[in-house]
Length: 174
Image (cartoon, rainbow, N blue to C red):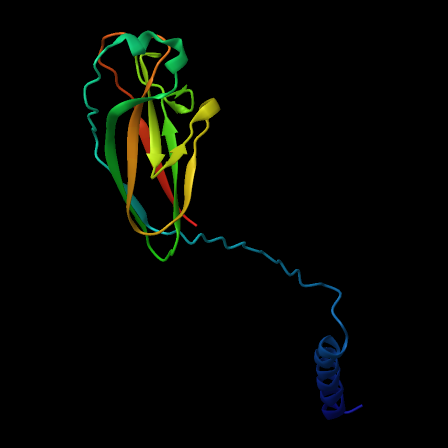
């Protein structure tokens, strides 16, 4: 065999080996890794609420009706004050208030010292009851002012003293 033929045969062998790697499937497998991400988002309304930080009730004159156990929980005539709560939530046509008080006295707010009087919360003629320690709500309100009235009620252990209570309000869009 001539040197020329041997060179061609060598070249053909190299070319065949090169094509063989393209034509035959590879035994090595590519590993594919898959990662997943869960995307979470929350749409929130920017809400704000304001009300006076201190409200002072008119003075209550201690009289014999304070000791009448039949009066416990009944409203004391002429003893009330108003609270204006102003709230707004962006992007919401309706909002609600949830109220929390120190304690319950016959469905009213129980101030310290306990038993002296009850402080009953009303919206118009509707009593907002804290009975059983619940946190009542006022739903379906619109942005703006809501007028509430605090009315004093006879307590079961009246005494001449100062009394204080705390009322908190939380605002939420509906």
